[in-house]
Length: 488
Ligand code: NAP
Image (cartoon, rainbow, N blue to C red; front, side, top):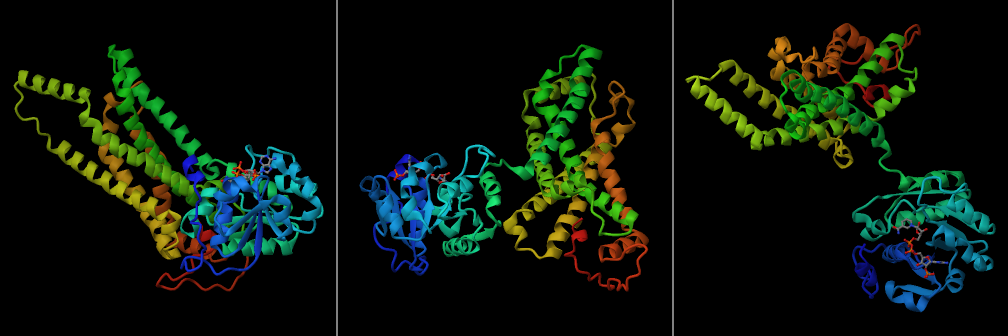
């Protein structure tokens, strides 16, 4: 939020009456200590939600104009006297300056909204520290995961969840009710010992993406080095040709589809491994090893990164003819052919191969886009389980098969051309085929009636060596797919 924005009141100075978006007043008075960004946004949201708000500031005269007129801005001690629930919108470093208020605060609920600047910055959480300073108060941790901006944007936008914890159930329920009236979804995180975890949440940088991003970077680095050796270092050593110009576009563009293709197969490989484990042990109740569990949980992010690389590959490919090097090589080839008086350069097989290769690539990218779009929570929530599973599982597998066709049409003939083996290294695309083809073959094997039947029984609770009266899925294939095992 810019300074200019913060300087002007965020809500008109009129009352909220008559505004159709305003929740009916609950009548409860809520106190806010502090008059900073968070305190102001909180006060506005509370007023809009129908609460009476009293703000406690060290300098009420100066700060009053920044708050809606419906909120009363007064001295800290005055504000605290008027309410039983007080949001402490002050940084942890300044908690001790509130100790003078200990007597008036006694017996009241303090909501600690504070965050730290580093994960596990202090030995004890801010909320526990506040509770230690005010033992006669009941402290509830909450609202720290929503920003001042989210508070202002109302129920229309922003994060809706408010994580709450406290050792006092009654106080926790009261704060949860306030959150609900304000249009948030309170999430009970248990007792005060969870405060540290709640305070760390806003500081975590894409926790679910760490492993997939490292995986993508690792694959990129491996394939990039491999392509660099084949496309730049090999011609330099063997023919003393300088091909460094290939690094920014050609080498990157050969690397991106490899990463995308292998990442896509890595979305389906853990499912195959999980199925193998279930078939081997004859049960779905045996826990998967931790690494497989982690892998299964990161499939969405791996798939999205696969789509990202595929999209970049498409853009890079479209830009290939724009390069100067491409034009020079094209003219050079044309001149050579003119000198050699070659009139017919049309190679029917090459033409067809290229047409099919591009067409299949476009289809693969289209399918990947569909997978990416349906993995967005807002879209995924509008699908029932069967629709989601059909798109993510069946269409995803089709995307893998189509990508394999794309790869094969590109370089099938190259695999048998010994000139393509630079330093005895096979063409990159042949390497990339390894994991996806394993997944495809495994999926085909699992679809064989005898294996599929056994897998379905296991996923519906049947266990090897234990007699269970079992009803097979009907001919229409109607079986509930909500079980944990179906997720693989
Ligand atoms: P801020 O703009 O700097 O406001 C802090 C307020 O604390 C001041 O306006 C001041 O109000 C009050 N205060 C009381 N005693 C103080 C003292 N001794 N020294 C300095 N200030 C004192 O900070 P903020 O962004 O509103 O954040 C307030 C709390 O909310 C922090 O704990 C922060 O971690 C938490 N939080 C903020 C956000 C956000 O988006 N900003 C999001 C989540 C959580 P008076 O001068 O009127 O007394």
